[in-house]
Image 1 (cartoon, chains in turn blue, yellow):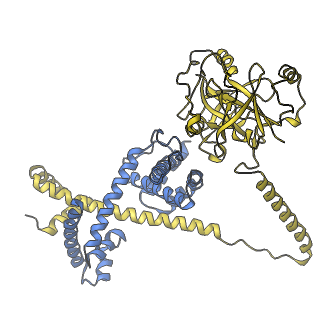
Image 2 (cartoon, helix red, strand yellow; image 1 turned 180 degrees about the vertical axis):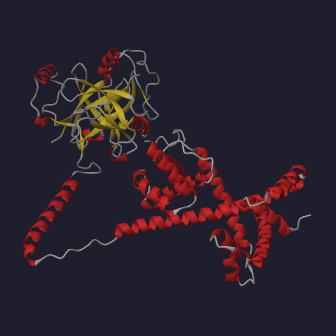
Image 3 (cartoon, helix red, strand yellow; image 1 turned 180 degrees about the horizontal axis):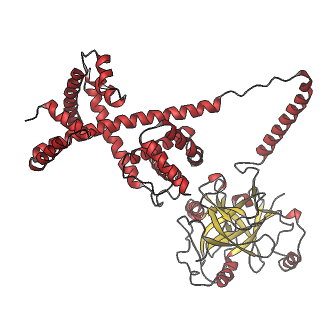
Length: 189
Length: 356
């Protein structure tokens, strides 16, 4: 038992750093049980994969906090979060009353807060991306290259034709200032 | 005063944690005394953190998508073909023919096992042709000569009262295709019943006793119906008619979902035999949790039961002229188990189905 707790904690810390091997291990370990459950509860295979991936993202975000310790097994957590997300999706889709799994409204929602925070964050990121789309070139590509594609300033300087990384950095700060202005306008809307 | 770029540089170093200790202290002091600067600085920090977070999340998501893709690729990888030597061909031919025959037979069997009920799932109505008539039944026959149908029943099941004045519930599969349906109550009286509503999907049927003066017992129905789902391990008992006498069994809720994860059912661990389809599942307080519908063949006690919510759904969908008022008060909760069972006997009945 002790061994498995340590393994799970290790897997989580690997996951938090976005390591592929650990992520793949977690993903494949619980995939069948959880997606099968969703399919049995009225989802398609694609729905099941979507919901399961979203629960993985929730776990990933939780793991970003260094203080984070899981109080249950990874599989249990993913299953609870997947169920919750799926019930929410179902109740949104629902046009006919009665077909919803009957305890959807009464189930003590496990990890309700985690999912709320996740959804707020998703909204926030969506707004940020919307601002990023409006910013215009070369800022859009430059910021995307740095933040989304995780490229170094050296690579960016070469790719965008700046004479040295410092020039690229100066340009990046200007872009950030513009992004900040646009983002606050977007948020006001 | 910091220029536009300087504040970004400072914020970036702060987020990355690369700020020198002296600079960090300087920054902290300024944040403490200059609220306007603090607000602006925090905004810059938040922006950088969000950009980093969004980027990380995006990379994580695309990694997940990639993992998912590699999964599906593994599954569709073509199987290895092994070439057969000529002298194996005859054996292989026979094997292939057998396989084809088996799969066609299986297909035929599944097709003929109608609807969703697959081969592992056996319905618990009792096929009377297989059973000898018992002594008891002969006695009842003599008593109720004028009221009893001429032939022997083809199938039997169990039912239980919804109201005292003759509405009762059983499984749809018990009465499916019936020419006529009779119930036999505690005293052994035969009474003709007519179906007033059903739902094939949840396997629920509601019957009404034709005789307007009929009452199940002296008082209103003493039990109520559970509206929420019970926890795993809840102790339950059931009363049914696997034979001509009422039989008591007890067990527990073993899964919140039924056959193949069906969420309108419970999976129970309680012995059930043919004839017990439609039997009530009660908890210790005398509340109806569910109604037995079938069992897993090849297992001793794994039984499936449609939950009370689905029964209530069918009750609610009854036509207006058949609208019924269910009992609101549970009069059994203070009774001992033996007293509960004694009371339940009046409101549980055997169902006899006749078809040609």
